[in-house]
Length: 168
Image (cartoon, rainbow, N blue to C red; front, side, top):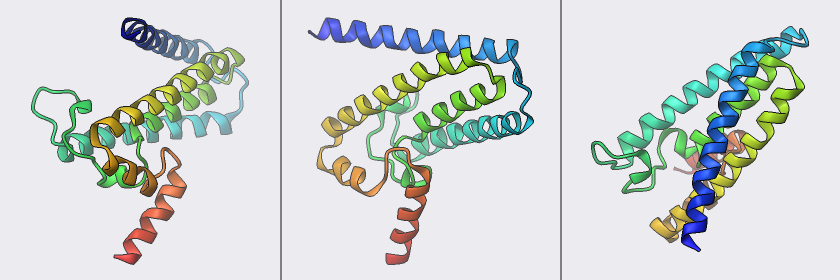
């Protein structure tokens, strides 16, 4: 069972990588295909915002997660609920998803949407798997964190964060 699960996991990573590379290539080939300037600008803003969010996420997880030198960010020793992680539980996944949507908006071609949709689905599945992993790793502390901070709903996360700050 574990061997099959490992194979599926690796295959999903490979599929994610291949689809992402294809999406980037299509974005160059079909740049602003439909000619909608507004979508193009929104796409670039989302792409830049997603890149900043991705960078911030890595900074906070390495600063606050107790990650030993030379280890991956998934080797955190504590739950990171500081900075962007106080607003959404999965800012790295959110940043990738927003960059995928941004590339679709930038290219404005239906093939980009066809390729981008399974990428976002794979990200969602990976997010759910990571939550199960974190529940096993951190137990009830992570469950409390899940109740406090939304998965990827940024607006809800900001509203909850403000309420928590007002309460002290």
